[in-house]
Picture: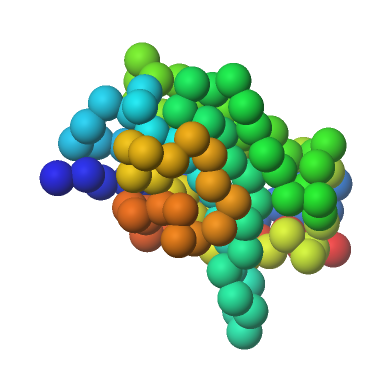
Length: 125
C-alpha cells in the first residue's frame, strides 16, 4: 500500500524559510513523478511545484518561482520542498502527491493518484 507522509510545516515569520519533506512508502519512488500542492482556507487546491520521475525536470508555479525548490532523493524515497522568502500569502496546508507510472510530470491534481494528509504552513507578517 502506498503511503505519503508530509513533515516540516510550522509557523514562520515573513521572509523566513521552511523545508517540507514527503516520505513515500509502499513502492520505490524512482519511477513516479511527484508534486506539491497547497490549499488555503476557502480556496481551491493549487499547484506549487512538480518534479519528473527522473528528477531532470522541475516545474514551479509562477507565484513561487525563484523562492521554492522541489527536489527528490530516491534512495530515501523522499521528496522535499525548500521554501524561502515566505510570505503570509503562502499560508496553507501543503500536500505532496505521487503520479501514476505513465505520467512524466504533472501540474494539476488529476495527474496524481496518491496524496498525503498535508502539513500546515503558517507565515506571520
